[in-house]
Image (cartoon, one colour):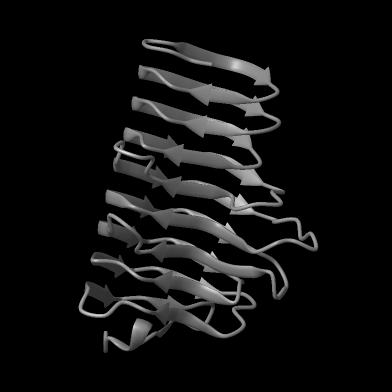
Length: 215
């Protein structure tokens, strides 16, 4: 467990929980659970099967290798009176989920957050599998999902490229490819402020009318 002011570099650990403020983790391999509950947390060049962010504030996960998970690779949620805010996920590689009979997998599932950026990351789900739901799933629940930006990501495979239920989101300049089975977007928001533009299918480079929003 890492508390206030902790620094962890160049290490290999079985699991990791971050509860403190002003925590830095760099070049660390985690074999099991990696959970972030703190504030002002920076992770860079970590390797893990998954990352959980719960009730945390001001979190950056950059250049991570997240693969071979039997559960959601990245799961973001609030916890009681602790509302998750200000999370940035950038330049990450999320790949190769492992199917089990109980699997219902989202590469990144987001519930109850204010301000999230997912940028310049690659999602590689591999061949079609009915258990692989979405690369990114914005799920509006109790407190809502707002001020989300999904920009310049590469999204390959899954049943849907993105699933969107949010109060406000901007989905801009993403590239969709691989074996996306049902569609690039499943939009379930009603009345949400959702903006999409400049999203394309690769390798053709054809523009996608993402979520039926006309851009």
